[in-house]
Image (cartoon, rainbow, N blue to C red; front, side, top):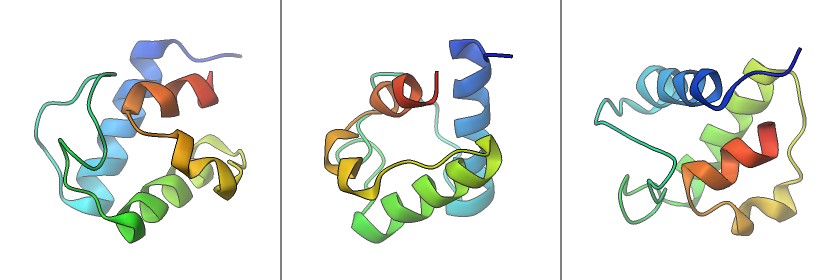
Length: 77
């Protein structure tokens, strides 16, 4: 069963809070580096936790194309 965008965003918010201590409001337009100040290691942590939570594999070479949470959400839908 495919998750809705709202469900995916809720899961991403949970990962941000649980694993990176980020509880600020986020949306699909939120930029990982600019808005959340995630460095490359923190972005990899986020991607690894998302992979585990969603039971999927994201190509690490593609992380440069994941700039916003919306980019990440599209990969998961």
